[in-house]
Image (cartoon, rainbow, N blue to C red):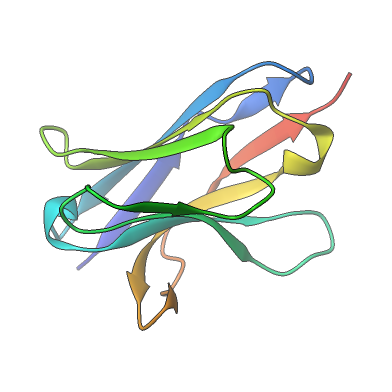
Length: 118
């Protein structure tokens, strides 16, 4: 059974940083295209960052380009999202997911809450 456990969220002020991690079990992250998805208050889920299976290619939602960095920690079988210069509009629950057929796949984890507020 594939499971994802997200962690690293918290409450920060604008301009600060957080590092999210997603521990995977039931599959090897190095073998799959993967992504981070977020769901803000009163909104539907949206993908924010995607990385290909080899880790050589990354893609970002325009609003996070230059501030977020997605990577894989193959030794820990984990997906990582480094978030810098956070803004209030980044407030959301963040999930990791497989990337399939041009979109995010099922959200399997509980997510981790990120709140950016002064």
